[in-house]
Length: 257
Ligand SMILES: C[S@@+](CC[C@H](N)C(=O)[O-])C[C@H]1O[C@@H](n2cnc3c(N)ncnc32)[C@H](O)[C@@H]1O
Image (spheres, rainbow, N blue to C red):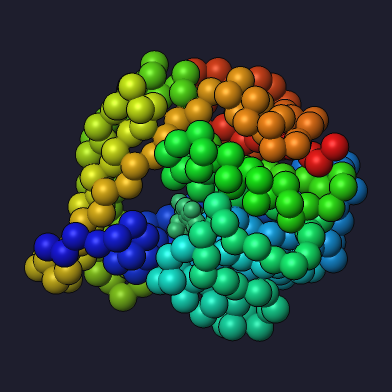
């Protein structure tokens, strides 16, 4: 079994493992957030931690001018293939979202599917918020989601197994073994992924992902320090109510004031 860098070999399984993730619905949610805040079709959107382009491609197809950044070249390669396949325009860059710098601003910045939770220290989260802030025009919108502390602490992470069929008929199985570290406010998830063809394991890889959970108040403080205002927090994809300990993922919307 190969031990890989985070989102290295895992990138090859990513789209198959998350084929059930409804990116179109998430883009509907993003547009519901954008619209009342003056971000419309044709606007420029920077996707921090864009991965395989799950939001880049549908938003580009909806007419947004997309730029995506990710530190995993393997994830960016897959995003680039999808962008080419769909014949849409999008700028895709390999880079670290704590430090990346474009000589321009955008109408909106998104960072979807727990990207900010991969920033394990306050300094790293603050660096990502600073990246978002310096790339937004006045009034620009920042939308992201993270793991929610109250839910992680009350539900507790558990071992989970997911099996999905790949397009070629192979079976992909991912076993996720979590270890909670309450002092660090993180969960280390050891992923073990196998590809089985006609009952025989033909590929196996392992990656450890360390994910930090956040509390709404600490997010508000970090965002305020980065120069954001108008912060609202809700369950993932739903800004109509405060999140509870039932909500493992929470969405956050902030604006440049
Ligand atoms: C769970 S994936 C989400 C990808 C995509 N946003 C989606 O919704 O499918 C998290 C991504 O964040 C990227 N990432 C995490 N920290 C990063 C950093 N500091 N700089 C650049 N990319 C980062 C990872 O490489 C990975 O592709």
